[in-house]
Length: 179
Image (tube, rainbow, N blue to C red):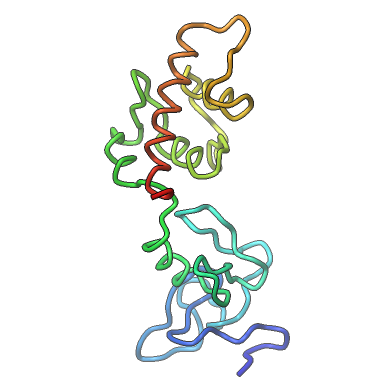
């Protein structure tokens, strides 16, 4: 059953909105109460959903590649697949958290920036693009560019110490996915 010409057939099981990921109510309904699109319809081109766990953006049809190798799935099923295939040790990372910041060695960094860096290897301050500048963020850019064991000419001891602390956190966080 196709809802719209060119739209993919919804996956078996409960129907969800492919733009925002809200499941259809059990009593039925044909339009999402959050965004107004019909359930199963592809998202608007500028509103593809993004996974809050792995930061991937859905394809134009609103579906993600399955982490289990099966057919493409909606956001709700994609999030459920992360239960069996985590991107890293989230409990360890939460243990570093101090409010909106995370402590790495003797430095503090915005938690969201550290998590995105550990998952993607990208330093991103989010929508506001404002990133707190400190030794740890400089170390992130150095590790991203030259690796954790780089010998930087004219290196400052504080930056070398920050790179070592960051490398230790990276190793511990990604250990869960290698096991």
